Amino acid sequence: MPSPSCDPSTRASDDPEYDGHLAAALHACGRFQEANQWLERAAARYDELVLCHPEAYADHAADFWLTVGADAERGLQLALQNLAFRQTSRAHALFQRAVLAQNRVARAAS
Picture 1 (cartoon, one colour):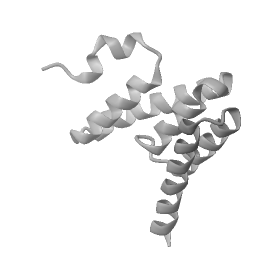
Picture 2 (cartoon, rainbow, N blue to C red):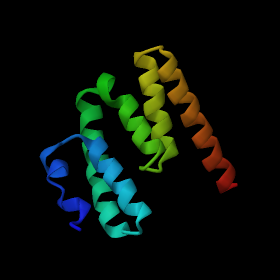
Picture 3 (cartoon, rainbow, N blue to C red):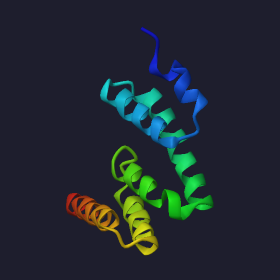
């Protein structure tokens, strides 16, 4: 079976969501080095997209950092930024999820 990183669909797309999902799948299979490469690629692309189009990508990037990116602080910052752009139930739910994630990290550190 070919490696998922050889999948042409991941190379043909610049959507970081694909890279993030692939990183999560590879990590779950214990392929940590390969997973980290895809994680770094997704993180860099989200950074670029949020910089250029924050209204469109802050929520997607927040979700990435709260899950596969494993950076609750970064996820919280982006969720707050997204909430400033739109006052929707989805934006509020994302912000609440980010606050809970940040609280879990704070409790684990103490």
